Length: 341
Ligand code: ACO
Image (cartoon, rainbow, N blue to C red; front, side, top):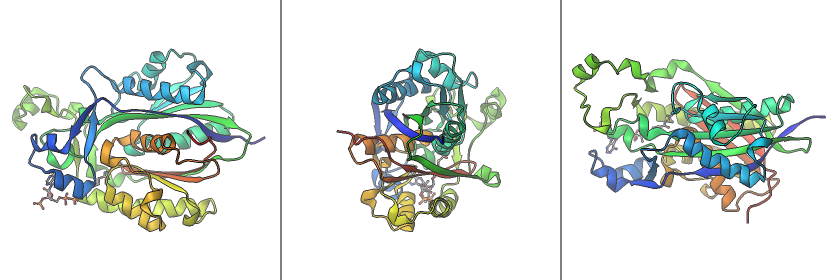
């Protein structure tokens, strides 16, 4: 009796506040035209002051549970992929578990930055196949705006906040997650990072760096990125991993019905689609409205395709992401959930 991991529920949450490119023009020396041309981004959602990553995760998770027609008591394990946890510990997953009213099942975070959901789906799939859990709730949730230096135009225009969730169920029925490929190469670790707050948080460091405590832009653990170098490696590695996963599981790019890429930059998304010979109308695109929401980006994009009624049982769906680390990967799914609407 072999188990297969089927996605049986999807949910998403985006904070109410929208930050447009025009808003950013008033914060840094940038333009709507530059941001749209170089990234595709038009706007992003920003978490409210009183909200936490776990609050966004709770909204997305509740919606995914409702969509699966189950409640938290039916869940056997909870994984949260996040780079922006509520606190260093306990894990955001345990905070989320309490907010959802669940208990007595394991809950943990994984940190693979923008590839967190891809890594999480691979992990959940393996644990379900091994018979360890029947139903896993997997959430990607990020408050990226909290780790941005709002004075740095090269990064502050790129990111947004949000959460996406799926319920994965082990069934004997064929289909669901076919398999995953994960990669990491820490030799690139300095090209994209947010250093630990301790590196910056001493009064001396603030003094010498001339950071103004009185503004929200203190940027305690701010993202630093060598954007064009990251861009080049991302295009190469994503092009390789999508070919690698199709080859590994015996498919051709023409078999892929939907590409659901990490939403960092429309030019990177186009390059991967070109590599697969796929037209952009078969590619999930949310970067324009969400910006880069890190580990939330793939489940948000998948949820959007599902809600629009694009996903149908039997279709082949390819997920991919590239992240700081660098860490990157892909999952291949034979979609089995009924079409929405
Ligand atoms: N507005 C106006 N000008 C800008 C801005 C801005 N917001 N940001 C940078 N510029 C300027 C630069 O200063 C530079 O000016 P110069 O030529 O006078 O020096 C010029 O624009 C070109 O800068 P580049 O960095 O070379 O621009 P590029 O075309 O590479 O685009 C971008 C930058 C959008 C960041 C792109 O490199 C990118 O998308 N990189 C990959 C991001 C990514 O995928 N990250 C991985 C996932 S994120 C994660 O894991 C957390």
